[in-house]
Image (cartoon, rainbow, N blue to C red; front, side, top):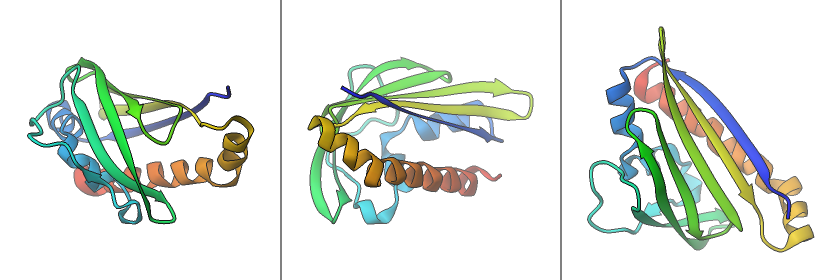
Length: 153
């Protein structure tokens, strides 16, 4: 099984409490996802802030508008420093996404580390090379832009 890694960093020039409040609220996920993905949270009674053990369900259409069910669990939370979401049901064989926040003198350095694996072995590897790697890059580029718009550059 091939496990891929996506790593992105971004300096956000805002107070850590404001940044944490934004990123730890699942309600803000759709603002960071391109519209073509038709990302919708289907969980009800979403709390204002994420917590360990929280299950979040979504509908997302990453390929040709075909809707997929996705369920993640928040497995770790260290307020103002880190949270981790892991796929429980969805399009990946493995999806482990760490969100790190480190205070710097000129802002907060946010680092995303995603480890993921695709189903169907060699077909997953082919799909990764043909479009999944680029799609994930584009999604995180979009997210970078939206974060700059929200917090300022």
